[in-house]
Image (cartoon, rainbow, N blue to C red; front, side, top):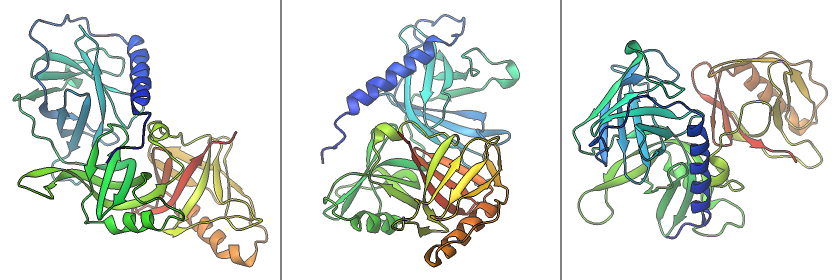
Length: 359
């Protein structure tokens, strides 16, 4: 099926332009690129790397394809913690540096030491000290690792088959009918006035792994939905490629405690406004405005109790009680594209919100 995202070349051109602008501001290693040090691709590079958002180092595998796509998997020994990423990579002609642009604000940088060796660079693009230097090496073969992460892209279902186009790489994958697949299919088919087979933005925790082909022998890269988050009919990959900032931001409340939240006629849209820690937050379930302060430390967040709530219509009292409970229970947060999730102390998702840009 042909993708309906006709502006993909323009999007990638814009992304490459942004990459070039960032690269121009960074210092490259002083080492000159040696003859014969062109990367042999496609290939998998393995070794150890620091873990993003956790302590220590993790066994790592970096898969690079000649078309500019990368997959990066980092997993600790004897722990289920994963730190996987994917996206686009680039290298300036004549430069020994490659940059990986994935789901994070800052690109990862590596020096090409040889056709089969990559060495980490610091955030400014300079060689790291010996204690912070890590090498990834390759046998010259590609053996793609499975990835487990939040995925954001265009989902479509037609004729008993589902396809997912991941936004950061533009790659398409068949979707396995396992895990939490039925939740995303039901949400897709339940859309009002939906065009059969039309692509819709979807977000979920999932895997990119290999599954048997529908026809013939062998396996193909396949997406598995592990935890469905939501569908976002008003979003496109162009918007999703830029992650919303936590603050200052107006967040429309989509669900609380797994229950969908819809506006009620003549009442305010349920939302949460984060003004920055000094400015506090404003929240409403649709009636009273709740005001309070909150604190953020890395992936952790905590909301202080708001001022006493005023009167609320009968149909909104339970929703407001749930919102107050969510604010009191929230301990973690994560943004994927334009979607914010809040988690309780056990890591269970308790709220889903969507960024709204006021004009």
